Structures are given as C-alpha cells and as structure tokens.
Image (cartoon, rainbow, N blue to C red; front, side, top):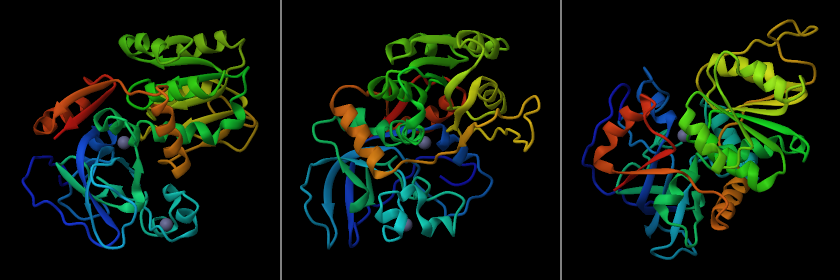
Length: 341
Ligand SMILES: [Zn+2]
Ligand SMILES: [Zn+2]
C-alpha cells in the first residue's frame, strides 16, 4: 500500500538477514488501524509497504545468528518491533522503545513502517516471534493486536479491578470482544458492554458481559443508574471518537480509571479546577496505552491455549483483501476479519 492506495502486488519472497526469520503466513488480521493507515495523507516511513500488524504463521527458515527454532513451528509475530537494545526493549516493553520515542510518534512494526503479514511470507526479527504451541495460526492471528492490546490496557489498571468493581467496555468489536473475555477470565468484576450495534451486544454475553447497554443518547444516564449514580471504577473506550470519550468521562467513577484504547481521533478536555461540567471527576486516572509488552503477549497466548480467549473470526482469501478493507471501513465486519494466503 501507499497513502490512499491499497492493492495486491506480486513481490519476491524476502530473504531473512542476520537475526531474522522467514515466516510462512497462516493468517493476517485486518484492523481498524489498517483503514486509518491507508487513508493517511503522508506517513513517517517509506512506501510502498505491505500492511498487516496482526500475523501468525509457521517458521520457514532463518538468517545467521538465530538459535533454537525449528522449521514448521507455529508463531505469533509481535506487532511492534523496538530496537531490542534500549532499556524499555530489554525489559520487554518494546511498545515504549526509546529509539522510536525519539524518532516517531508511534513505535514502528510490521505493517507500520516495515512490511507486514498480508502476504504469503514475511520476514520478522527472531526476537519478535512468540511460540503458539498447538494453536491454529488462522485462529491465533488476531491475538497479535486484538488480543494483546486490550490485555495491556487491562493490566495497566489491574489495581482498580477488584471483585466488587464495575467495568464498562465501550465498543465490543474487534478489540472489545477480546477485552471482555480477558476481563472475564482474570477478574470477578461486573462487566457492562456498550455498543451501537445490537448484534454485537448480543454476542457480548457469550464473551462474558453481565449486562449490555445500547450506545445512544440515554447511555450515560442508564449506566449511572446501573451503578447507583456513582459510575464505573474502570471504563475502556475501544472507539476513541468524541461521543464515546464523552460517554466514558460521564460514567467513570471518582478515583476511577478511563482507558483510551481506540484511536478514533476524538478529544476530551481536561481542566485543572473543581471539575466543571464535562471535565474528568476528581482522582480519575487517564491512560492512553499503546500496544503491549512481552508479558502481555505471553499472557494472551496462555489464555488462548486454555480456551479462555478466542476471536470471533471471518476468514477471507488474501486475494479479497481490498474488498474486506472496504467492508471494515463501512462497519460491515463483525468480530475480526482474517486474511488467509
Ligand atoms: Zn490494529
Ligand atoms: Zn528499544
């Protein structure tokens, strides 16, 4: 792809360099971010580029210096490729890589600066591959973003997630339906799913939601009523548009946490005074997480291996990628679309 253009092209199978692995792609998830990337007017990295930051496959071959792999091993490809040498990377927090922090508004990775997984083969740093064991690469592909990004967001507010807490999850599509499952598997909180789509809300019960609320003009009043007028201890916004941020802000409890995960370019005003109407309440923690750490990735794979985390999938042949991207942009994809080469 290049800015404004997304098309299928034949390119040579890449050769893994030192420290790199050639992965035969099993599945590549399509994400709302891909729609954003295609529609960017310009970007701080070179084009053309292969999209795909949510990829699983099998090890095909590797370059010099790579140890311990076997051909055919199933792997998840991390969606952020840090420098591997800074303090953050050495601590497993490649999503906070200091090299990229000095050079880029976001840490880069496959499909975001480097060639990604919407192809038959991709090259990745050996360090960025996570063993999947017996998990099916098509089913596992969405774990790479739709699984690990919510897991990271949840782990950042873990101290708020006590057994008597109420958690509101706004947007239960690609990432949100995974967030519900992770919250259900790792907390005893009361989970309330909020979405504009009644079908997604219906499905959210199976993903662990205790209650559902249609996202309309009455949603804030309904949620406050359901929480005794106090609001929820934690609110995750997986949309990130101004209406959902306003809703999240209206229903987060005093000293609660508002986690802005969705990159919908909405805004929220923060005022340093006794909270006027519309500003966050006293003590509210605002967090804008990005990506995931190594520990989050291991946790998500572990939950999937235990059968506690599974993406709702639509499988499509890779050749249909442009049409699926359009369907995603039009909100016609439920769960996660995975391209299969
Ligand atoms: Zn994504
Ligand atoms: Zn780094």
